[in-house]
Structures are given as structure tokens and as C-alpha cells.
Length: 317
Image 1 (cartoon, helix red, strand yellow):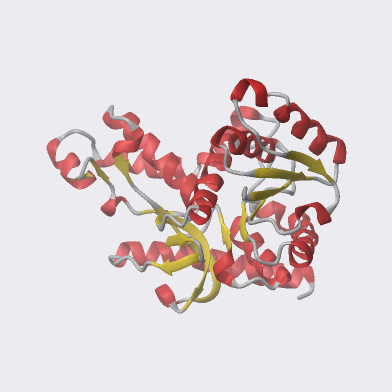
Image 2 (cartoon, rainbow, N blue to C red; image 1 turned 60 degrees about the vertical axis):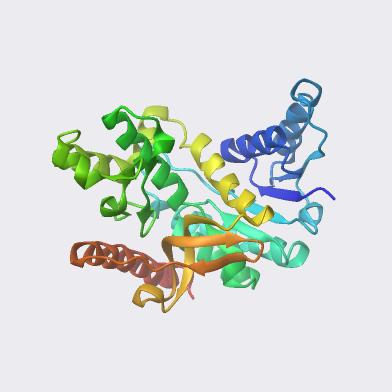
């Protein structure tokens, strides 16, 4: 029996995910969007490539939540994208309303799905979907750490003149300017970044610049595009998480998840390494942090809690 993957939002991320799902032959696809024509148009366009790309999957566009019924995975990218000069935080009020509607649709038609949220401001929006849908926290996660870590790995690879998949590195904390690049754990082919600094292969100044560029990675793309935000890597990142769930592969990935005492925090969604398998988030991994890393992580969590408080006031919670 084929997997069923529902994509909420037919924008650039949704369309790219639908195409990648077809190419990867991951399962049947339902693209939902309030603009039915866009959803149906992209679905039809992708379906018309099936004879060329050799896939035999159902690709359907819709504006009816009933069509996501019994989806195995729901990936949410619906909402307003950033424009130049706009922060992820600026999107809070607009996208909270969208998430409420999405969550109600998921609760009614796909209550057993594994839900991945991409919409910004990410850590607050995934919390909104989990709360309003009533799904267990282990089945509702946010995509951010995989994306941010991929950017970090690319920038390190370029500086060291190696292929990106030889670089192991991950990013924790909130999806924003306060994200924490865990350089102390980063390595290339098993050799730590610190050792590479000691060898003279890369300087600490270069690493610091890469950390800053990673935190600004989304804004850099927005500035260049001028009319939208990143979509290729966010799409690939979300599907990596979906594949881990559907294949029960037990992959360790940095994701925004709800903490329940881990890292000293409760009832907050924030990026940390987790194991993803057939039960969703099966384990939250607590990495050891030195004092500097702890301080940065606390600042990042503090920003999320501050935004959460502001959101409660704005949204009248």
C-alpha cells in the first residue's frame, strides 16, 4: 500500500516537495491550498511528467481538507513568506491564524499523521499546530535544524574545499538569529573543526564568519530573490524528516520539538537533536554543552519564550 503525503500550501515549497516526492517515489500526494487553481495546476503539471520520470503515483490538487483524509504524513508550508526587511517574527500574527485553520483540518481528517511544520516563525507555529490539533507532541515537529545545519555544512565545506556530505555539523536553538551552531561537535571525515583550525586548514575568524552567515542564511536568500524566500533546501529538509518516519530509519536529526524537562525547559518548542522513526520523535538527545554553548542556547530559548508571551497577548490567549 502506497504512503499518502499531504502538503498544506501549494507555494514554492509545496510545489517543490510534491515534485521531489514523485521523483523519489515516496507515495501518493495531495496538495492542499486555499487557491484551488494553484494546487490543481501544480499537481497536473507534475503528473504530466510521470511518463518521462517513470513514476506511478496519484498527484492531486485540492482546496478541500477532506482530501487529506488518512494521510500518513502532513507537511505544512502554508502561510505568508518573508519579504526583504521582514523578520520571521513579523509573520507571527498573520501565520498564527493560518495555523489554526490547518490544525483543525488535520485534527478532523488526519489525526494519526506525522506532522512537519515549515511555516515561520517556526518554533511558535509548530507549537500552535500541536496545541490546536490535539495531536501528541511526538507526532508534531518543526523543520528548521535540518535546513540550518545543511547551510552550515555547505559553508564549512566550501571553506575547506571538500564535498558537503563529508561535513558533520548541526545547529540547535530557535530558528532565527539566535540559533546555536555547535561547532565544537563539527567534523570533516572524523577530524574535528578545532583540529583543522590547529592544522591551519581554516581560521577561527573564518569559522566565526560561517556561523554568522548560517544564522543569516534565510535572510541572505530573501535579499537575493527579492520576491520570496528559500524553498529548495526547506523542501529537501522536510522530506528527509518524512522519509525517516515512513521508513522507520531512526535517523538523528535536529528538529524543533516540544521539550518536557530536557535541557532544563518544559512546554517549549525548540531545535534539538532527535531520533525519528515510525513513532515520530522516539528520543530527544541531550548533548553536553559547555558554558558558552549553554548561554547561547538559553538566549535562544529566551527569545522563543519572549515571542510566546507576546503572541499570547496579541492573540488573546
